[in-house]
Length: 224
Image (cartoon, rainbow, N blue to C red; front, side, top):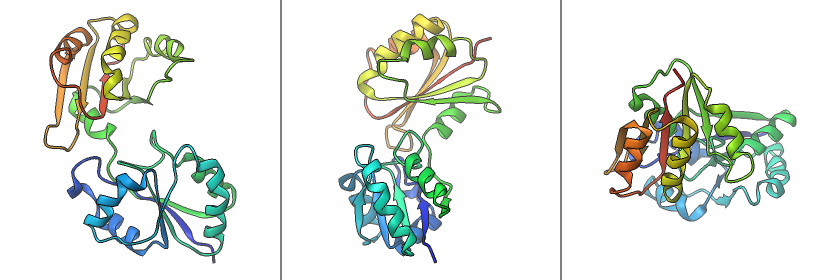
């Protein structure tokens, strides 16, 4: 019998957010694939998980997938984790999942931590319909995406790294207008978790004089 590929969400900050099921799957897996073994090692050690861990990230996932598929066909159960949150959500995993499905292999994604969910709920914007954009293209296609999203009536959710936050807020003023309502969350589930709400202009002014640390989730109100 073939093994199963498990996508296992891990905490985005607070280790208490790991699920009992996730711990069981990680402890029972024949091997674990991690986006960055150095990042995952402290978390795995904390929970007493001693399985073999191999790196699986955006730079090697295409080359490594054939071997992983072979392991699955040999009957090995494999758990895939990212640095934080749910694999394949703006993280490696999609390519492996697609190939496993093509090969008719068994795959299961566990429910668990994902950064955009608490940020979206904290925003106070409509959650019944929303648009998840993840990270915008760095260069090619970025302007085009902004122009399309400027007309979007649903709540829009973005991920952003700290060193690009102010630039992104400047771009949002340009394409969405400085008076568009936004909610910016950072350091979710951690000690210094913070959510700042207001117009794009107001939020940009705030972060010009306050620490810009941690990963950011930006929620933008849809066009009225």
